Length: 178
Image 1: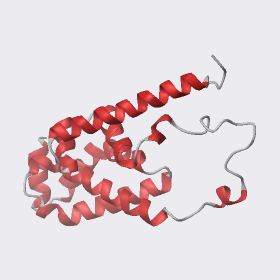
Image 2 (image 1 turned 120 degrees about the vertical axis):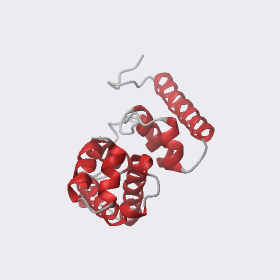
Image 3 (image 1 turned 180 degrees about the vertical axis):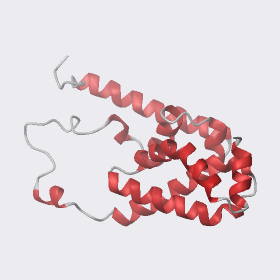
């Protein structure tokens, strides 16, 4: 069935239509949550809250054609709320064990994407891993398509420079020298 028809039915109170919509986008929702949050339990919490909010507010969606971006925006907002809440929390594992040892190089424990701001890291993941179009990202982030293109370009350049830096340092993948 057509997504727009399902959205309209869900707006008229059809829970089965809403469930079908959620089933359609559940993998994308999870990927978005996972790109923002590191903890699996936090992702589950964010998704649960986002689905609940979407269900409660679906009648407020003005253009059914934008259901996917509307839903993903709710997921992102919930993830950012959880991230803010957990920002100052330290897990027991981190508290008891030191961050690094003399045997490890600082770059080995970092992801290449860690050089990016969270917003840019999420943008790259949404575009490249979740195949969300530039047009949809522009709606999602409430900015122009050119702004999205510029942010993607800048983020890619930062990642590229990080890869070059790692190669120059002689640390690449397995930690071996050149």
